[in-house]
Length: 304
Image (cartoon, rainbow, N blue to C red):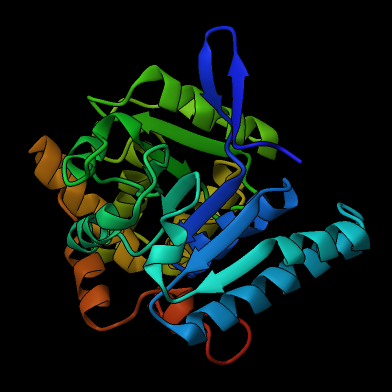
């Protein structure tokens, strides 16, 4: 068994053994899934017991798919599930070695969560956010340990996508970065280091492309089906941009575009009015069963 602290000739070195995940949604349960498979002890925290039950059920289903696909064994599945615990008590997560916040892309909510953790944290605990666009430096500033704070951005779906963006804030020390990189290495994933600019690397490129596809629809250049087919067959994209927007969540796409627009003060990042309208209508994509496609009747049907 790994020990929490190993003494080396250069001083006391922490080995991350237990990981806390805050948020039991799509990203949170995916992060817990891969961490447990990598033999980390995992605690998932959420304000809703119902969300926690749903998350553990989803993790079990995804592990079953991996067993069927012969990517993992049945014993690995069982061991991973044994590694995962859940709680509605944020204080229980505070005693882990690394805490990854994975709630909605809402800066105020994230700041409240980190502020609530402060009285309960162990001195050695590293804090991280799975934010896809928000300033790491700004989030770190509401904690008592900006030097131990890092952006830890997984791609969706977490068990499948191989990239993790690690984003140091202005105060993040090299030791924190190195310890988090070791975690990513143990997951068998690849690190891309991004500087702390709005939306980092992947979403700085991807989400404006999706926004432009929505403008193409908004201006009547092409239909939903024509736009998605064009990018799949004409640019060899595995998913069309509007299909991908529904998968990501239209609210998340809008939040990232707003961060880009406000953070970079460039009109080219202005969110398409149609994207805003869909979010206002509660048409958020797959998670709400309606977005650029209607998922309520089995086969997805374009809504425009």
